[in-house]
Image 1 (cartoon, one colour):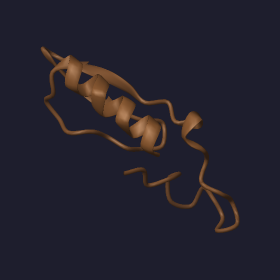
Image 2: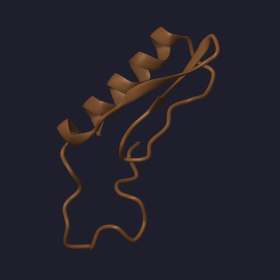
Image 3: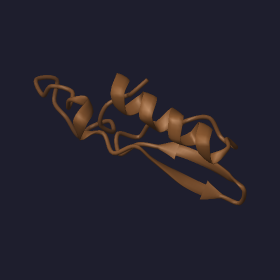
Image 4: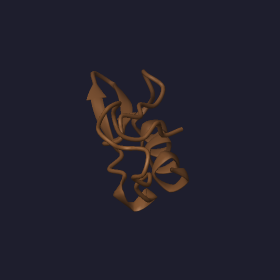
Length: 63
């Protein structure tokens, strides 16, 4: 679920950016990864690299 831009940065008249503007990626934390997006979304913590990449891709395509 994408929450949109951080509070206070967009007016009510501005549309939510389309999915292609989401920059979802993974961040390594030891032997685990976390999926994150430029919109502020964060996936479940302590995932395998493959699961984190899947979380990021699902977010990017469903946002």
